[in-house]
Image 1: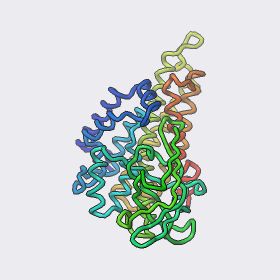
Image 2: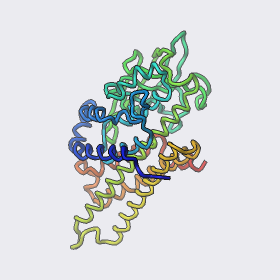
Image 3: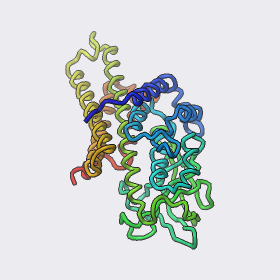
Length: 375
């Protein structure tokens, strides 16, 4: 496989890297996270103006016709800056469902606003009892005339607080854990019967618990076919895991480089910490695991773009396992080698580690994906 980026992708990578370097110091991130809406709206508008929000959408929909590789390039740099803006929630997940399942009229109505940043989406797929199983759905949709009435509860919905529309997975037929019978709806966030319980997450982002009670949604807001939504749901989850893998790789790079720099400066017994062989071995292992995750990211992303779907699915399971396992390893060692200050809020190290822990828990943790890979 050719892992070289195209000239356009290198330009995007350099542009995002410059943006992160100029705008994403820890102090400004903490300040943006602490006030509504939980991210910097000026940064979001800049991302739209630079065309980043349109990368994964077809040219016929007003985007740039990019794919998972282009998203990987952006998300890896976002991981280095711990970006707060809802690119993953609105563009990769919500937008990913809309571009795959929306009718032409629905896409022409919604996607221009998504791409220019004026409209944000959320993706409500998780439920309390489901753990990591996408097909475990108890939220129901009952047809009444030309509309459907939705009832249920969705958990840990990123960006619901600022979204104008929410993609909701529901069950229209079948048993609780059947893949058949799942239907996706695009629901207005301010619709009657939608109640949000918003809260900050441990990594500085925002999420919501959503109560859905007798919410009426017209049939033209269905994404894909009635009862056939799992295919779209799984495809969006795969794209999200690739994006999260790229973000994690960027985060790991910052952690191991910060640790190497610190041990070269910090002296103990008259020598820099980096002189001690046991610590050298530890940092080499951190680097090796980072490189392994990066290689698996490239492999999984390339397979998703050009490979066999079954091979791509297996590679994505492998990526998510490695990112969860070695993300924790790199974060834990970075904190330990920094000593007590490694866990302070004033040092960016702990913020990166917390983000890696959250990434591990999204769409299935390391153990879950190891079982899927083995199966």
